[in-house]
Image (cartoon, rainbow, N blue to C red; front, side):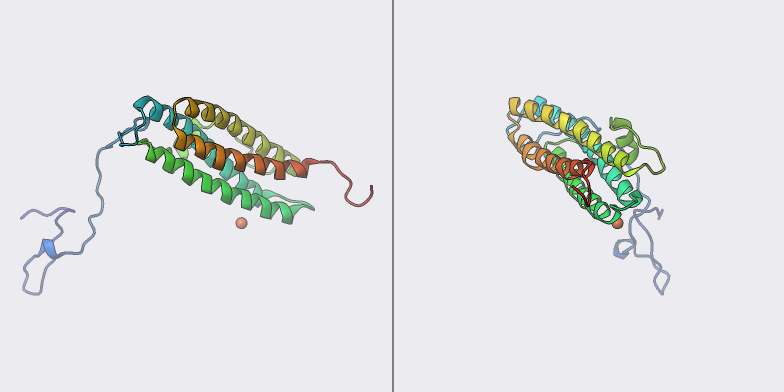
Length: 204
Ligand SMILES: [Fe+2]
């Protein structure tokens, strides 16, 4: 009898083998790709192929940019410095957590539409249009400005996607983009922008 990873043999005390009774995990398995990125499967959700394809493309762009924004928030959470360190350290981590929630919501919407959510960071890096920051540390106002510009880039794409999904009657994606994504971005922009107001700290 031949053996491979699918039929691992286990020797018993009398030398016999019992592959079917083994609890050996079937490791080192490799297979072909069963759905290509950029394609959609058909689910019975009464939404056209064209609508699902366009929504998946728009969502994957927002998803890639959101993953990058999440990473920028963590980077700046770690690298922030100076007299506002503690409040910004906490705020940037809160925003990072909220962006990570959006990553999951957007990715699972792509899957719900039959598509393939972008996931691998190397693929994400190829797709995002958010500029790469320096590997080192910037001054705090530059960090915050960089985050605000990333937010506005995403918001611009989200507003376009809201228009497209409304026209396509993809109400589920439209509601996600408007209620969860857009409003979260707008709120985070407010909280960030208030840290760039040049106001006296102790004397009016
Ligand atoms: Fe932390």
